[in-house]
Length: 289
Image (cartoon, rainbow, N blue to C red; front, side):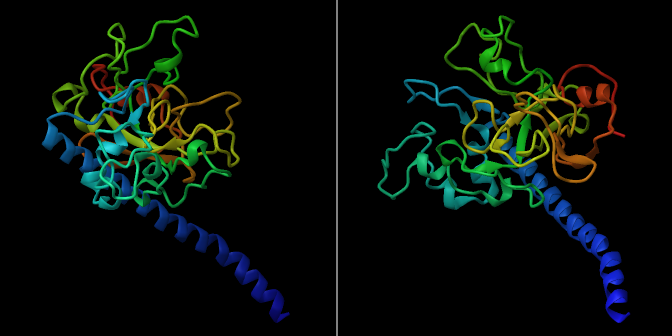
């Protein structure tokens, strides 16, 4: 009888314990998104523009290597262990140890950055390509499908200009609508408190752990930046979903806005509002509920 009562008590307490743990994890995630937002602000204060979501190449690249903007904000996140060793003069996957410190960019891109990992996110169920380190967060680049940045010609459609706060840029393609400079505060005409800057993603686009369609912090290509093209927090996709915002928090996704505030956005948000808050200068009259 006593054992049965203890079993009932444990069954009653377990959900409460799980809820308390998730509340703590969600608070930690919120704090990390806040740190990222402050790092982006400090980057803007230093360089007078926001970081790019990704860029196709640096001057030293003979071919595109797609460095992510998450690399550029590392010095503003007190991630000196990686930031001070990263060689900005070398391409993202360079194996050259030009300063002789025993580290190369190709090695550093495999390092876990704790600030870039939500404690609720289930890690990939296998090693990622090049053993790249995963991330839980991605920049918000607006509303177009992120895959069209690379594959618009493949799909025989025009390449869209990304309309979010933090945008991808191309340096090698003069005819691209994304051949331009990064954005600045002055470009956020919809209002900094009404525009997403960063949000969460995970490695479960089909509801189970995978190695597909999540974010990595060093490789920009189609990873580490996203858009509102897909419905928020959708986990039952049947095809590729690069750039979708989703999380393992029950009921929604954590976002950082351009003003530096952090909001937990419910997955039940009206899609028109979700799309409107994802653009920087759409002229929509929309606010988060």
